[in-house]
Length: 53
Length: 566
Image (cartoon, rainbow over all chains, first blue to last red; front, top):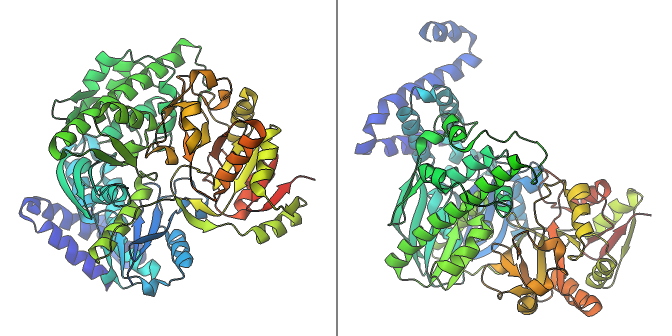
């Protein structure tokens, strides 16, 4: 649960007007990281990640 | 009661520091426990040791303060990689992987590793932590503060005004324009390891002539307001993490020096590197003088506090004291990232309403267990006897040209051995220096050793007096011309020495120097750190015994236990 606080603080940081431009990139990177982490543990998700990347 | 733990980690030289009710109770680098030089991993061993010294548990902590903002750091890495794309294509996945996979979650990792609620874990900015580590434990109620390093989140250089317990930022320079990264890039160019070899470049500079000024004017442009810009086309740290400098630098200054090639300063090739180092040192000093002039103009302060890795440049610090216009300069001895853990803890403590306290010792580590050391030494077949007057015994051995290892009390925080974990020798013998360099420390022949001297005797042996930096070896003084023969082993080629003045009553080092003076007339001793090549400085009695067994030194003092070979 403590990771949620970090995610909240991260979103709070990038909600700043001057940092909006980085938000899409960060979201894609975070989703990609989560997918890659998931695929290392879940064999049935791996084919999905191969088709995406 | 308030208890705040400061933490630095993940880049180089991780450390933990504990402040209780405004008092600095303990501060230690993780490397001393893991025995990995400059270990950057989260400092759980150091944190546990800090709590143990205070007799506290993690539950007793009011706050844990990390020394930089992980979100701003991620932002800078993103921006920097996007700015330099596609040249950064190799670095991009590595940097982002490290950020998103590990470093972004550092506050959670600290909470989980220490066993404290996540709500108690916070952060301060990198340069604010540095500034606090410089100003809050300083002897000044009001001072200008300058923090200069490679890079924090965005900033590389920040000017501050310190008043009471408050720090106000006055101006900053941002990445990629960085004095620390300039020095690091040239350190790599000279064939040394970055974050480790900068001292060597400083030592090497005394052997050269600053004849590359024209070329360096392309590497760094200094402005009248103290700011500077790097010629970024000569550097590669934005796009290649493994190399600080780019091919254009080699076109400008000549081919880089191969790593590990033995030094021969009589050869034209190695003299070229000495000249590059001399020019770098001169330019660094001028850049710092420019920043100091601007700080003086903005603050009108008479005292300056310095922190950040660049503040470990003892030669530059001496120049600043001489030429910057500040009457007094104090450099927090653990000026690099390790020291920022102390600053973070002090910031947390001040925010909780505690006052600031002047730091008067760097012996902030764990203590020697002499009884255990004696038992272990005997089990190794060594002679280990308790002695009544360990300082006298050390002085007697030193008077007979012996090399004595000393592990005494709590170990020091920061890169300098100040008598707690030291290797002592006669400062007059050039043979002693060669013996230490070749057989014990395996160092480059041009690197000097440092002297420790009784504070009151400083003017009799050096051109100058004790100042705020000399107790911590963060500056140099000229050795008096008539004393250079007697201090051959600790006098650098340019006639300077990075001395330690010893005043602290009842310290082992003071006892050794007083006893030496009575026996030989000289209150000076060669003092180098108690570690072998590539090793962290010894922490425990077993580390010291391991060093003694592996190296050709004559005796080891573990507090009052004298260890010798049968």
